[in-house]
Amino acid sequence: MDFRQVYDENCAFVWRSLRRLGVPPSSVKDAMQDVFVVVYRRLPAFEHRSQLTTWLFRICLRAAKDYRRRAHVRREVLGEMELQEAVDPSADTALAVEQREGLQLFDAALYRLDLAQRAVFVLFELEEMTGEQVAEALEIPLGTVYSRLRLARQAFRRAVVQLSAADRAPHSQSASKR
Amino acid sequence: MSDPRRLLETATERADPVRRALEAAHAARPIDQLTQEVWTALSAKLPLAPNGSGTPPAADQGGGPFGASAATGGGSLAGGAAITATMVGKAIGAGMLLGALVSGGALAVAQDPPDSSAPMTSTSLRQPSIGTPSRDTPRPPAPVAFTAPARRDEPPPIRSARTHSPAAAPHGATATEARAVNAEAAETIAPALSPPVSRASEPGASPRRSLQPGGVAPSLQHDESAGDVIEEGLLLGRARDALRRGNAERALALLEGMGKRFARGRLVQEREVLLIEALFVTKRTTFARERASHFLRDHPESAHVTRVRAFLR
Image 1 (cartoon, rainbow over the protein chains, first blue to last red):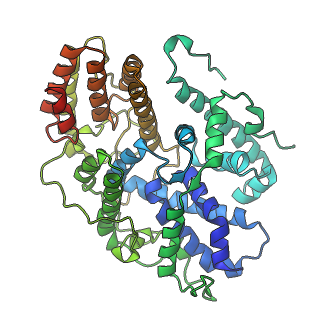
Image 2: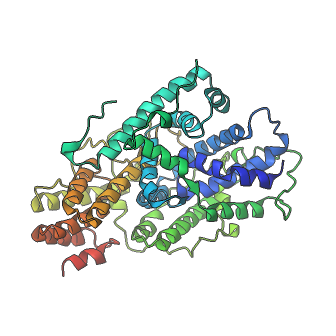
Image 3: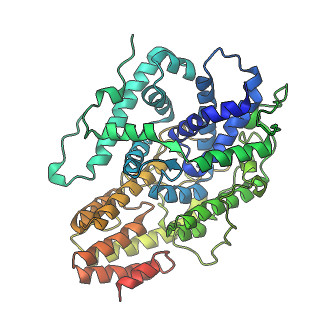
């Protein structure tokens, strides 16, 4: 399989996976490079026993974990980066203006989920993998996929409703007890 | 067990914010420039043929960027400064006032621990030879102590998953000072509005901590600080939009909510500036002018000084 082809076909997937796993815009280009260097090295040995995307996602997950570990050490610098991104976290995204706030809402809500929940949520709800595919991608039992998904959905919905309710005038705030 | 239906299938109401969030996430794509830049950087690093196919080495030499590999310790501080430069460049390019804020505070870098198993070689990727087009000339460090460190939250409620580094202590005094001044200013000026500083156990407070070098990485709980900053930005953006749409009273209400939630947040200055503007617009001129002059007194080096000064003419 041609590396260039793999890159072209999966670049967007790698980007959005990294972003959704918590790598901010300021670091995503470096993280993407890290991922694709690994892809380059391991592609010849890739035997297609799993799907390419699930293989790629595992690499992205590893990259995201590494980023987070280093991020905690680099708090001083990254604090300022976060500041910039707070103003527009969708700066690296091609998206219609009216959807930018939706994306900000999504990003903010996703941060309420821990990495394990995020991974399941993103793969199932957004990449639309089946439960089995998610289980394979994350190397966890199917039952764990379902229970994590349930928790992730609850947390996500709660977060989204709370974040968007902050915008409404107090007297019209609807009950968000779900 | 069969799969549940997907959220987007079940969230059918047009006004459902979950739907709005998921649809936006579905639609999000990286900008072309980004994918180009990453490819360029990869080409510089990997032995790719002109058509990009390349022949990967037969044997995997080490674990790749994630395994223990080439030492990157030496590059980390330079890498830190380079990251800042890129980011400052972007901030300036986007015309954001925050750029100045960034250059001042960001150079207080906590260095990477000299960890030989530093897994990612990302730090080495940030050397100038990679040639990312968006990189600007690095700014020199701001010689005057900037207010950014004073806004760090010190020390907030203990969270079990984090360790608190004593290295954070130097900021503590300034931060406490700044907060005390803010509290005083706010309480004497506009009693109707929440002061910027409030109770100790503020749930929205974003603790700024650095790990002890070589310390234990915290468990992968949800990333509170980054998430808080994004939320804070979301609220600020909403308030700004309301003001731009001519709804200054709504902006004030949003800013008040923001102040309660993020009393010690990252964007307290931005909030204050917007608040002052909204006060002017709603004809609360006396309050506005007093807050403006207090802002100038408290944050003489702020990036917003010019703007705030204009309010006082």
